Length: 232
View (cartoon, helix red, strand yellow):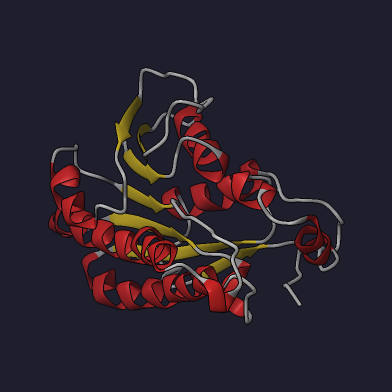
């Protein structure tokens, strides 16, 4: 049974992804720092890990205490929405740690075991925020960094049979989307052809494909799940 490590798995895209892997007979290790309000149902193949990804120095130790990982899904992310010139240093550091540093450290931590078996898949969750000058400065910066990281690790690890790809969702129903001011939601939805918010399960399907059965020649790629439109 393949083992999947998913961060930010207690809700939203992470939860939908965990549920999809579980429904297809995978062992899922679900990492999150806030489980108390999660609706992710218990399952014999589910292992919950309570861990704060801000603690990047402890990630390697956390991973080494787990079974060997076949697929890593770097999904966890945070968003703060203050004006760019009033961004608290604490929030900036948290976003950089969780959205950018933690995914890199997780890749470094799972890569040795993947190299030893010459097989593995890594799926990084970016955002359409990576493609434009985003209103939420540090969120956009970290998601653009995820795309660069994806291509870099595809180059670093491809020779070892490890596929590293990304998914860039558009507006998706989640706590992150819900916290946006209504004016921002209206602006975002104006660029979406169907006029509706994406459902987490729709993003999960793309993650599942990259994490299980996409062709070996798909490496360093980004799949946009945004209804064909981008923020203005």
